Length: 181
Image (tube, rainbow, N blue to C red):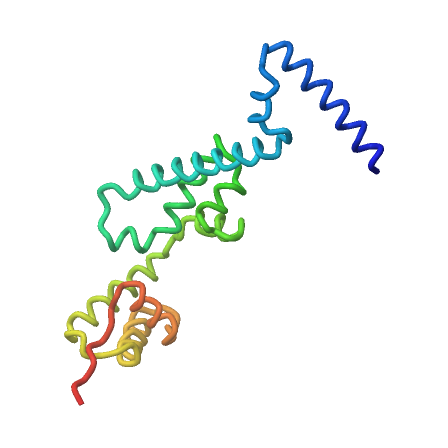
């Protein structure tokens, strides 16, 4: 093992001496150059990572421009996924995902997919929002579920459960006011 290392060192020294002569460098000047290219590779990786981060931040900022805070909050991961897709032409996907903190590729592809709501779901969501506002925020998800079930039954939609009502209310920031005790 040491013999192999000595041979590599002697080859390196020959290359170094030739390069010093070729570039007319002082042997003392040579010491400032890294002997191992690992340092150079690490710094190149760091520069590439910073460039990816800067490009991603720019794309996300452009996508956020002109949108309300609520819209941004709801679609944050989707906007990041779209920005990453645009940047995969220049950078590799794995690096972009690590910067965006989307841990897995599957979550990237999930957020990239557009969520399409049926007319039925849109109708139910509109009903829940209107009903909640008409009750002046005094009823919680349990009472809204009862109203929504009656509405679905009258329209011929499948029965809606409390989990779905609760999710819809949470996504639309519909929270009941607490009672004074």
